[in-house]
Image (cartoon, rainbow, N blue to C red):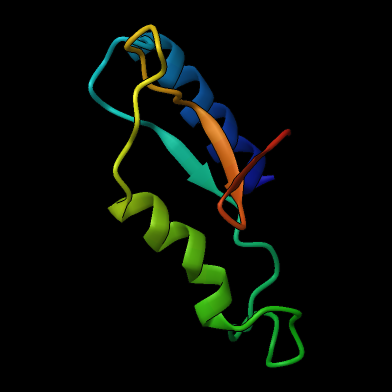
Amino acid sequence: MSKAALNAMIKNLAAEVGPGAEACLSTPCARITAAPTWGQDAPRSADEGADTIVWLATRDVEPRPDGTIATGLLWEDRHVVPW
C-alpha cells in the first residue's frame, strides 16, 4: 500500500510541476531486497536493490526532442515499468 501511495504521489507531483520543469521526479521499484524485513532469502541483494536508485540519482537526464523531461515514472532495473 505504501509503495502505491508513493508512486501516486510522484505521478501527481510531476503533473503539477509540469513537463517543462527542470526537475525529474521518478520513483524506483527495488522489489523484494535482502533486509531485516525479508531476510537473506530475498531474491535480490541490497546492492541489486540499490542499483536503479543510485543510477536515477546520478544519471544525466536527456530532454526529449520537444525540450521536456520525462518525469513521474516508475523505474525497475533501469527501465520504465507500468503501474
